[in-house]
Image 1 (spheres, rainbow, N blue to C red):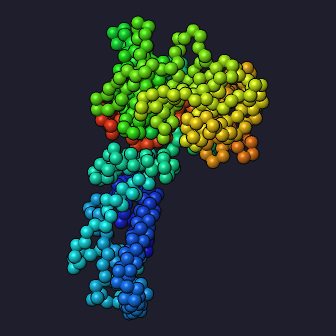
Image 2: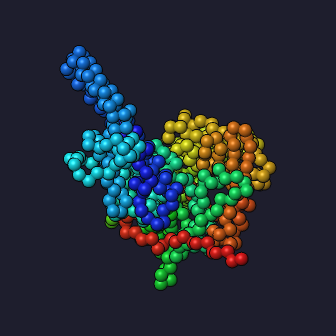
Image 3: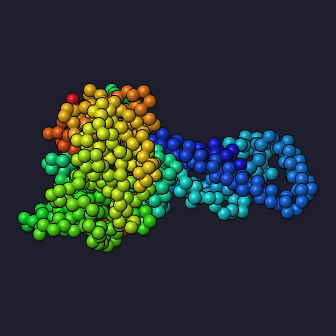
Length: 539
């Protein structure tokens, strides 16, 4: 029933009257509203049909059939006398003074209405001020929440600053942020766009660059993807990312002493947490989310001035706490290690609540060290076995593709092999995803690192080649393309453009969300990281 009235609402009736909103924004909102009305209408129709079947069953099929026949005959008579559906019902939309839809109700058309142009007809909204009893609201709060949950994260941030206080309160709530994140991960990934954030590893630039991964993969070669730069008060590197949050590390110098701090930042909302004192320099580290206890955690092996190290787990909250946990299984200071760690920052795998590090042996031994953030315990498992004639000097690369752990090997100096772990922690579940031949424009001689798999869209893989170039590998036809990334405004003038190579930069993939540090009790501000606005072009 509601589906018929979805088209009755005009843009003027459902839009928020604000001068900075465009007609396209309103039309998008109207379409979203229509879709939600349609879905709710189908659910209500299904429920009504089930109730009818239950009544027929309780009263007997004979009585139910008679009643249904009588009701149908009465309906046909009313349609003939009033016109085919012209006076079936009216939908009354009460719009308050600020332009919000506050109530919907249905009711019969009054019998004293003449058959002229004033007759309310189908696909027209009739507003009434009296004569009808006040019905209860129809799914109002639920409808508003359903509509807003279908809006991308970045659009919600813009909307939050230009709507009424009730909507702003809803969008800013921690529960709404969790529901939106859950929906974007499980139902509609388009709500949260994948982005790449990077920093200078040269310790000289206090900026972080961000660019859209989808633009890199979808834009034609002549249309560059622009880097959006953010500037902080000091140099910061990225430890890891989770649920739209980046964990940053900085070094604060006070009274000739160096203090090491960590801070959470959501580039989409702009909010950062107050810096957290770590208590020493940390080497091995990682940031992730404990989904069982709903806690964000920072893992760090902290080196003290005495030369000793302590393994700490920090839990972010109103009163951020830390505790000492079991020592990390791999000691970087071991003079006779079985292998070395490819990256010191653990890779967080959503859905498993784990941080993962890749250890590469000097012969053929390769394995993953895993930290469970829920139990705060370690485990390790093997990677796919290498062939005897593989190049064991080349470091494999660990990544995440299709929500699975992925690893890339250099195989026989002729191609790269990418594997996916279908069942996390089970070595037998490693499945070969692709074989990518060495391309002359991708290989660097001598090369000691493999191709880094970053993200997949359909059957196209975004990867970072050993020569430092981003590339797009089509797994269907084997073609290789090089995206056009404009990094001229990233605030790192001494680094070469990303189109040429990515040396001296550290990259972290993350997905946009509206999760902010204040949602879990952290004191927050929006002044630690600021967007660098492009300078106007003077002609």
